[in-house]
Image (cartoon, rainbow, N blue to C red; front, top):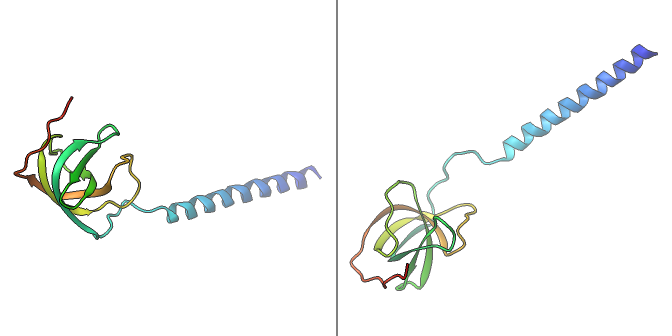
Length: 121
C-alpha cells in the first residue's frame, strides 16, 4: 500500500513539473524577441528640444506641424535641451516612460537654424 502511495505521489509530482515546464515554454514563445522590427511609419520634423516631464526624456515641439515628439536616440550623441534640430526617424513601437508627444526613434538629426525661446532653469 505504501509503495503504491509513493508511486502516486511521484506521478503527481512529475506531472506537475512537466506542466510547469510546458507552460513556461509556451510563455517564452509568445514573448516578443529582441529582434528589431521593420522601420515603418517614417517621421520627420524640426523645432526646439526641451526636457520632458519625466527624467531623461527629450521632447521636440514642431510649431510648423503643430506636433510634439518624444525623441529616442540610439547613440550617446544627443542634442542639448534649448537647441533647435531637424530630425528623421520612425515611430517607436511599444510603451515608454515618457508621457509627452508621439514617440520617435531618431535615426538622423542635425542642428537647425532657428531661434529657440530662452529656458528658465
